[in-house]
Length: 370
Ligand code: FAD
Ligand code: UDP
Image (cartoon, rainbow, N blue to C red):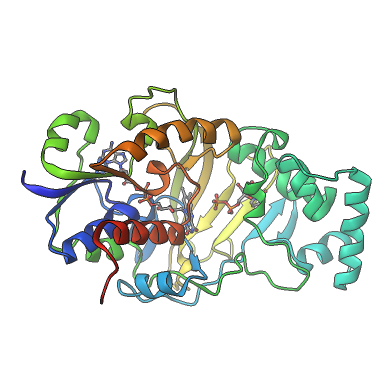
């Protein structure tokens, strides 16, 4: 066998694993079916602007170890995500905070805002939220739900809010302060020079083969290494033997515009259902760019079918139960490790993936002594 590890997927999980294994002296081969490394965090410089090719990626974490780890590979800028939500002709600040409440109801103090929300929660009669709709109303009341959550969420996930799990909306902070920071985390920023350099540094000196789909030569690939690290779809690995997991896909539409500032903010959400995209990102604002042109990307949610990119796992009860069956098979494997957003079927952000990858490395190689 030529390699100690075959790593399927040159995304964040696979690349961290490869980097740590290589450091310990193990020989790795990384393959990816795409024509580039980086998976969904891939960025590309166009017109002097770092373009996030698979949607806005803002790094945030409260885990000091994760923050220090990622900074070995890039310096981060001071970007703070403060999206704007557009509903018809109205503009609101996100996440839900005193600025949002003031614009919506004219309330000025946290007490007034809380009273308004409590009134709406009381009217709804919801005691124990059972789904995303009920969870949202019991967090921020009916007005915000109707304008800023209902349409956006339904188009994002392709299902009505009362058929979706509550945890999705709990990702967003609700604050009774005038603070537009989308995240509560201690550390936040965008790598100066983009994300791809991070993966390039991780994979430096390691064998990488692009445009290679593991499933085209599954047995060959498995026979090349003592162990496999698999970061693709776990249900596909097992040939969908228990049935297909559900995913949500996206389509990205990117344009170069002959003006220097299109929307004045990195992320603008489009919250009405009738507009088919969920957000427009203007890449230069992630890095305070002053280039003469600008580049924008519209993000359209899409139904996933085999062959499409599975951007989001659908972590509802039905799919989580199905995943548990695959996980049972995976736990019995001695020579295969499943990792990352697709291998573990979890709505992970980058910091979660780093935590998981480092945990996996500790299990595999022991604690790092450097
Ligand atoms: P991936 O990046 O998906 O990498 C898996 C790799 O495996 C891919 O390159 C794929 O091509 C390859 N692969 C799959 N199957 C095969 C196969 N059969 N053969 C060969 N190769 C294969 N996180 C944040 O922290 N902040 C954000 O702001 C943020 N925004 C996001 C916005 C969007 C639109 C999306 C989709 C995700 C966002 N994330 C964000 C999450 C972030 O992208 C993920 O946490 C991270 O990229 C997952 O890394 P991964 O290695 O698990 O998976
Ligand atoms: N969401 C919403 N309105 C918004 C932004 C987000 O209703 O203006 C909901 C939506 O259901 C979304 C979830 O909050 O899927 C999580 O949002 P986040 O920005 O974390 O989504 P991601 O960046 O992962 O797509």
